Image (cartoon, rainbow, N blue to C red; front, side, top):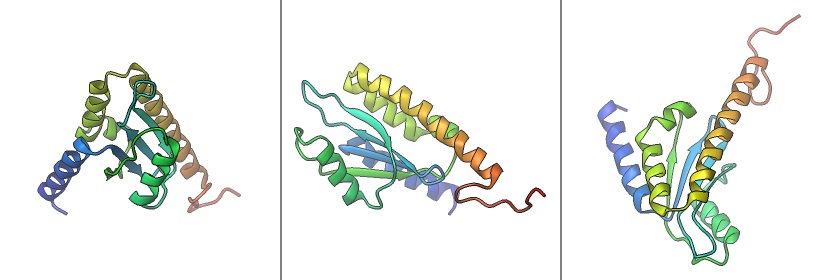
Length: 146
């Protein structure tokens, strides 16, 4: 895929995420997803959380709708796969869009959750790197210690 093609597809994904009720950033290297649910009521602000991948957008929508049954059912979901580091995500237009949406929601609670999510992602990434070095989990060492 050329750089211009990647940039075009990323711009399209961000455009879709700008209007979706649910935004899911899939981090396959960490086996986690950042999920932003923009729906809210007077008592229940928008939320951003981390959860394991569920395999499909339909499953994610069902999960989110079950988790917040008192809100109107969500019908739109934007899924953005992220194959790079947490740092590159934070510096990307994807995170900029997500942070802008959270800030526009006016929810201090959601902004606080956003900071917590970033710290959790960094922890997952550190744990993943340690697992790679040690050859644990899905990783295997090329040379073993004797």
